[in-house]
Image 1 (tube, rainbow over the protein chains, first blue to last red):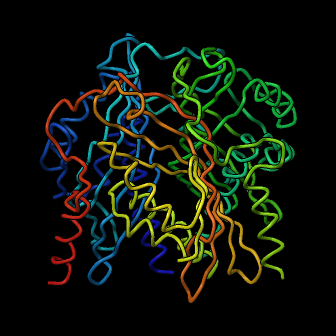
Image 2 (cartoon, chains in turn purple, cyan, green):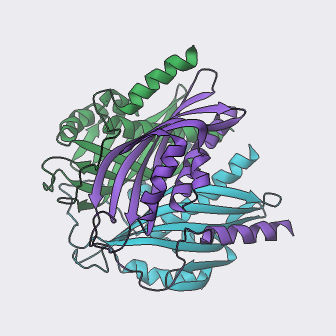
Length: 172
Length: 172
Length: 172
């Protein structure tokens, strides 16, 4: 039971990271790391605060990003306060104009994370964001064929508005 | 334990929805919603019965679809009978001819679901199918290089035939 | 509790299979099957040892592969020692030259697995690797824009070096 619950919490760290990146919620991104956490990316290597400062303007270049994760495999070490978590994913980036290869591409990655539990909280102490492959999507984007729910990065995404509504409803 | 089990059931609702869509099992699709459930899609907004009536002919245009989900993050509310579940995914659509952009495309989505538990059953009361991006796959499809297991949408998929066999075997 | 734990173990079998394929760790691939396991692939059908012998040279043709899995749905049968697990995924293959369609493509698949538990160990007795679609990525690959963590298939992947380090650290 305890081990399953740890695995759930470790998985949630990665999920929150992705949500933070895709919704441009940098505080949520930062919360995935311990304060002394370190990140190794393609083009960056250093402490988490510097990582967030580096990644934010990159993210703002795009109209949107989606970091879709799949395989998530965790191995626990020591007394169960250390973990290595490998997470597979694809990161879709889109932007304008739609034929700009630097703003329209998909990459495959693996997050190889050393996580620790401190004061009951699991977070990243060191991340290796392994770049697997990158593919240009320039010129392949299609506009939506009709109206419907669309993503936002300013705190008004359908996720945020629905969550606020359910929080009110469930209380009453 | 209870919370983990709720999360499992909530995840299963989304998995059954995807399986229903991809195997053209519309009853399975419907079972993901409460009878008064509502769906908001690109090009549709209304009650679940109308949604199923709308989506079925769209699905039949394609030779196949695959709704691959990843990130699934659940927040529970109230006494734990309400949940907001966000699920990331990509939907691959393929059809004939292979260079028809309307029949060969991939889209990224997030299902933002308000689910509730009624009489012990978790299901969707309101879904926002957020369209993130759409990419044409026209002209990129390759035929299989050899024989092997292939998908079916008529109840004879390898999943169905294997399940029937294991059900018989495991009993005896 | 027991059922959740079984589901975790069944999921882990599929995760280890993917890791084995992508890191070229054929022993890890083999460990996902019982010794008498059978695999049905596009272009192959037979026992696990023959499958591994068949797949290894195919994998070596590529510079890398990534088998990203998502939807994973398990149904238990009998006394809970039999399971049918359906797992959705995409397999990205990349190689040189980057415009060679046979070395640069992505396929969608479903693993439809009959798994059993023997002596407490879940593993595959029969797998149907259902090919859903295949798409050429020829000519779309982009080189990394800067240095950073890269995948390896020789036992020195960031996953392996980090795991060895954490194993030492967590003990001391």
